[in-house]
Length: 283
Ligand SMILES: [Fe+2]
Image (cartoon, rainbow, N blue to C red; front, side, top):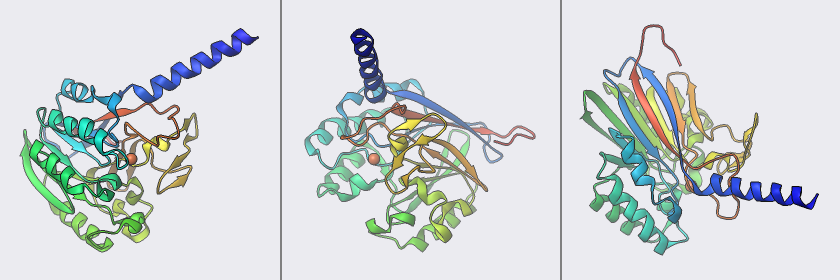
């Protein structure tokens, strides 16, 4: 009996190591009539300066992305030294692979050394989008990326810059642009849980978000158990959600709450394939 218990405990430990210290790749495909040839996007969120994810840059390079999006919380507010070693090295690694666009999450936003983070990102070549939109050609595509800063939707408690209604005005501007429209916001709940301010009332090919850490603990048939900002049994934790004329891809991120291990929720890099819509194709 004691052998069986020991074997089960050992298996659980091995599983927890796999589920917390190794990185997988998740893929989603989004067809759209606005896509001409196709675009491969890598999305990373919630690195939280975890030192055991130093191979993530190499993983991203193998995917040969056209664009890299960093959806917030790449730094860890409690660990400045670790951030300098891990996050800043990561910034320099990824900008060698493809153009990189980033938004701040709550961790970048609340540290006293925020200007240092900004400088490190910009010197590495990352474009930080704080309530602004950028339009450019990428391969054969015409791409608009709108980065929304916190202070929106359900996250009024972090209110820093733009009032909530400004975000809808920005989204309407993005909606009117030609080609592929990408929205970046750290908080997935802003997609549809913010009432009149919900982003899913606008049309765009994809919104990328993080913050939920996959619900930290994921159970079969139930999904994530808890996410900051969404509470217990959160709605948006991991994967692709389609509502009205908009798509949301939520990264379950890499790091998470240090005091609670992940379970059923392996840290992941996300690959978003934007593809031309075939006749009759709907996702
Ligand atoms: Fe986070």
